[in-house]
Amino acid sequence: MSPAYYLYLSAILFTVGAAGFLLRRNAVVVFMCVELMLNAVNLTLVTFARINGTLDGQIIAFFVMVVAAAEVVVGLAIIVTIFRTRQSASVDDVNLLKY
Amino acid sequence: MSGLAHLGTASYALQQTTKGEAVIFWLLAPIAVLAAMAMVLSRRAVHSALLLAVVMLCLATFYAAQDAPFLAFVQVIVYTGAIMMLFLFVLMLVGVSSADSLVETLRGQRAAAILGGLGFAVLLIALIGSAVSSMTVRGLTAANAGGNVQGIARLLFTRYVFAFEATSALLITAALGAMVLTHKELLVPKATQRQLAARRFADGDPSPLPGPGVYADHDAVDTPALLPDGSVAPGSVAPVLESMSAARFPRPDVLPLAEGDPQP
Image 1: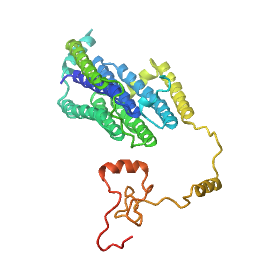
Image 2 (image 1 turned 90 degrees about the horizontal axis):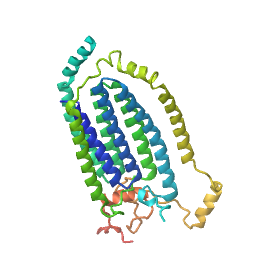
Image 3 (image 1 turned 180 degrees about the vertical axis):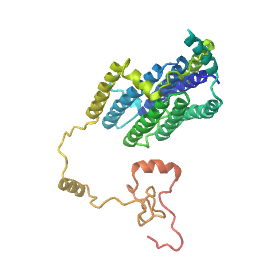
């Protein structure tokens, strides 16, 4: 088995996450799809670190994790705030600026 | 030069991974892909969260198999532990009963998303296939010689130290932002207990709501209380539970009275 299979797997996971991002309406689930895409990219980074024989890929994956943690905190806070004012977690209901 | 030649032979040996790693990969990769797809397709957000945790644990195992033990543990602790818990907390706040609406607001969006996803996957896989054909795998044996954590720490505190410092600023900003965003401004003074009692009497229903399971055939929280005439007492079951149990237990509003029961 070649390590390239990890790259194929992460491509598939990234695609599933991107499709879910377009398909789902619940803001929390949409956010989970973003997390899935970030995780898929992390797998790519770790695999390339191994292919290239340096640890830089793992460092970048580590930074991705840190930024993802900060992003989740702020994003979920925004979702909670919107839910408080609009009583809905659906991304379709956030349309005040549309008309 | 001799070092380079040594690296060349090592890379040839690492082109094929060990048999154990192949077993782990072919065991967990289908689980990860199926869990990801089920996450996207499941109606309930809680199921999505748990399936995403499965994907993350599979990825942690892959990190461990790819000479990244530090990242494997960070993945389990930060992602599966902290981030997924945060997601579940928010799901509890936002309401577990909120199922996705199935109405398409943009016509053809769903089909376009699936087609676009398939096309994107084919494109990515073809690109990877053409890129890895001439790939040599060096492996992390040399880089991890002094330990994986030590190697990462050496890079983190030398070459990437500015990014590391920026990360600390980012984390503080995120924590402050979350506090500011979720802070609730009190527009009117909080009602005292006396005011609450007065409001309850003014509404004409001073007694507490009937508890679930009173005079019912079951004392579970999702079993509604029954009134003396056998009808379901309104308000005896929390709305969330009502919406969840309505699908599982379709309950007639008035239960038929048996022969020997006293007539109301």
